[in-house]
Length: 170
Image (cartoon, rainbow, N blue to C red; front, top):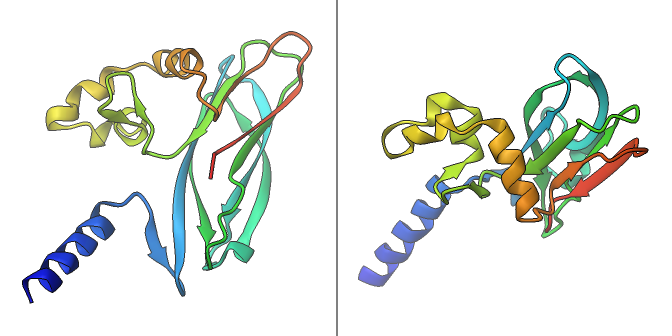
């Protein structure tokens, strides 16, 4: 009986503190964060995978393409089910601009000091108590850090590049 209670407590704790919530019939709702920076006010065209409203399966994910104004930050939800993990990606199209930098990540990505996640840096209202220092971290510092560690979900444009795409690892 004690083992059963301990197992249930562990499972419930994992579900409560997970960055991913259960949806539908055995599916997972995965939350990703997209940030794009560059010349303020400049527009770029982006594409990414997102779960459609009311969707509960990986089949309900669709590629969204939109023009956005920099800087741009968005939380994006995708669905997986039946063990099928979607190919979560970010593609940015710009007009030969070398100032554009971007990333896609989950909140599991801890930045700089190992304690600040995306939600404590980009949503300062979440940076309280032991995390209050996270709201002081600049987006430039985040981007410089991701570049320095060769983060797979980070991109920056060089002279002559107009389209780049990065994937979150499965």
